[in-house]
Length: 510
Ligand code: MCA
Ligand code: AMP
Image (cartoon, rainbow, N blue to C red):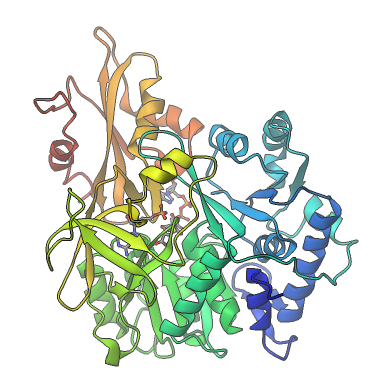
């Protein structure tokens, strides 16, 4: 029987020389990991998980700082046949409590500094095991794995078996867990492998977090499936990254990373000469950034588009013979992926007309964890997933995203759902109502801004509201500005007109 476990496919791509360097750490101690280190380290971690005798399909939740060991934990979960649940390190206790309550993981792995509150809420949720993993390679997870065998037979999985759950916030209610299978992840990784011309002698600069699709799947799978080396940055440092372009061939980033590198002096065609591919995604890349990068580095960024529910969907061409990389567009549908534009009635839009983007393919997720109704709502009757993005397709098949029908802010590549922030603000004493909007921001693309109405006779303080939120929610969700006003603009139906608020505050971060 063929094993569809993603780890088997990744392992098969490791180079013959297992002593070659797989990952070189760029920051901190001069550490490097061979392919054999990855194989043996993930085997020991997988054996530890197996030794816990967890039920099939158990979720393993991880909220840890970025480290090679954290990546190995992900690979070990795949190889042991369990389901990986990564959590943004910025999430605070109230946010994590929801994910743990909803996903009911069997194991939680957290940073040692968070063990106090994490273990408390995990045990209240009847999680059986809580391990710690720190970015200096200390913690109980590795201590326990150290006495395990470094030989492990990869668990047999079918393509439809779940490999990971990625939580994406809901427009109205709480976050939804998108269930991705081994087949979803592998088919997308193989498509990108061919399309972007990955080779064993590529070197990827990995400077993204590993709790989202971009850093965990698109970047890591790309390098692993090519047997290519990674230069590993635990934290993005623009100048340090530019300094390593001389040793690398591929870089992936969200637009904020490109903007920050453009603000550095050392970005020149000579510095980028060896680089063959710069990829941008997760948020719209401004045409100015696209052009400035071309001018300063001599290289044309390839912009692509995707989602947690679907992994990658479209890409600008890699090879010149397949077409130009057009700034402002997200390129063509990936081979094997269906992308279409529909009007409000669900009818096909004419070429160039704006409508709702819907998608289909082997990369599209299997539904939201324990939310069958939500899943049904997000698919059309003929089985296409409604992305919530609004865009158009030109005569050559290039897609452009022009907006979103979902009320979503993307700040520095992280998603923020206004309804969630409004919920926290509305619960505060003296608040009658609030509206949260995304305002153009030079560094983050969009920044979160809150407009708050006090209850009659109450005085509110904007910075105090932001300070309270900072103690409750992930820092990137906290409004950069909070305005106290007497009333919100409304349409005749009484609905808050967020477009007018966005217009009113548009120059705020100019
Ligand atoms: C940090 N801060 C932010 C953000 N990040 N504010 C708004 N938006 C952000 N994204 C604020 C913090 O709240 C803090 O504020 C201050 O900046 C410093 O925090 P620090 O963590 O030190 O910031 P940083 O290290 O400079 O981080 C900026 C960053 C990071 C490197 C741009 O946000 C990042 O790595 N973004 C990438 C996200 C990503 O990988 N997205 C992929 C999603 P204060 O001092 O006031 O507390 S996957 C996806 O979307 C799909 C599928 C796709 O297509 O890829
Ligand atoms: P996530 O929920 O983190 O998976 O974010 C997915 C959303 O990010 C998509 O639905 C888009 O709105 C947005 N996105 C990703 N890539 C791009 C891009 N290249 N241009 C514009 N928006 C993008």
